[in-house]
Image 1 (cartoon, chains in turn brown, cyan):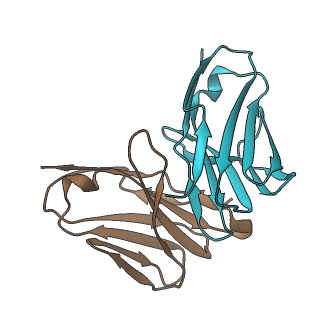
Image 2: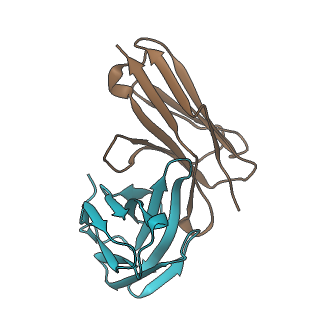
Amino acid sequence: TQLLEQSPQFLSIQEGENLTVYCNSSSVFSSLQWYRQEPGEGPVLLVTVVTGGEVKKLKRLTFQFGDARKDSSLHITAAQPGDTGLYLCAGQGAGNMLTFGGGTRLMVKP
Amino acid sequence: DAGITQSPRHKVTETGTPVTLRCHQTENHRYMYWYRQDPGHGLRLIHYSYGVKDTDKGEVSDGYSVSRSKTEDFLLTLESATSSQTSVYFCAISNGYEQYFGPGTRLTVT
């Protein structure tokens, strides 16, 4: 069974601060996906990283896939209240199956 | 947004009654999935389908059955609902690479 550990579970910061969310596993994944989920809605795909060492940027969000494809990080620069939500990482294994981390609940206070 | 709808969006039912949740897609994607999301457990896979009439069990399939008679529809049935099945249920679709989620169904079993 593949497991993904996500940290921290909760994060409460002030507007303008930077933060990093980590997603770690002992298993290798063919790709890793990051989702953001708001209350009462389904997860929305932010990015997919495929290659070991890959870095993708989405405005103020930077996603990195570890060289060994076992871990990933999400860095947010100058967080804004609109970034508030639940961030989920998911590793893709055999048969297009996703293994989800437990999520990081982020609150950005104005 | 990917064309995924779920119905109903909210349901309250009594223990022992059958319940069917519907997922409908307009994207013609081959793969469809049912997940449940619970506090402390993240998203867990219940069943999935890799084509019409082709389905398989996920991590938490006990007490659930599925059917897929058309590409666009994937039904999840709780034959005899129990309080432990109170949860938020999400459907997802995939082109074989990335998964896209529906808005969810909040089910309460009293």
